[in-house]
Image (tube, rainbow, N blue to C red; front, side, top):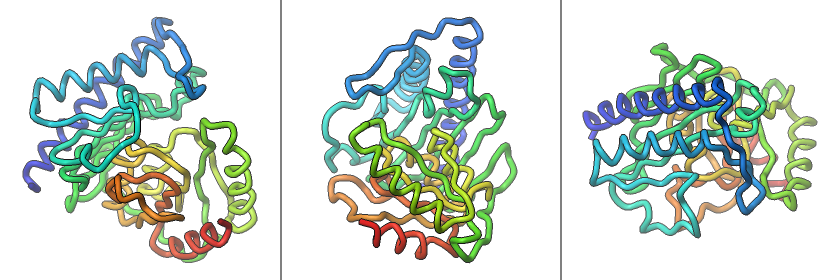
Length: 269
């Protein structure tokens, strides 16, 4: 499986880079169309073009593999969905940033086998960085190996977080922001969780916590863990979704602060 993982990582990196080239081309040529999903979430023609590129690459190279994508997945996810080799992709993380010419957006692709993530890549075209992780093989940014920042107290930490698309839950996120701001050195909200989580891997952030989907955490979570981060959850993990792909109430942090951060957030429930 490790040999397969190396091959998959190379393939994932190639896919996200190709998709990145396409969405930059669309933006530079002013050919981006913007619509809204049912939940009020922004989606652009770039999201769909990126999804098409990645999906076609997977189908032509690994026709026996499944695909789980933000743009084409509907309904409730059940554990049967995660059996066998499954590519989990986010064609454009940070769509609002992309639509406003803000640089924090990325394309993510990872592969899991029976719910265990083996390889993944996150590409942020405007930032000029590509993060790659291989299970048991480390995490890298533009070929340079990554290591989390050694930090031992939450009061010294810079923590990333985010807001939900569901406006009825924003007040809960604001309460979390207030809690974090009073216990951490500072907080950041970059609105592209895959990048935030990769920033934990590179030591730019000490932790990230938010309620996310499998495609938000699949690649970036592996990259962070391979750089030494630890993943936990504020609440119980659903039996329907593998723990490495479960993003609801996720906490990804440097080992020295993960328990303190989890305790803080759990006590606030």
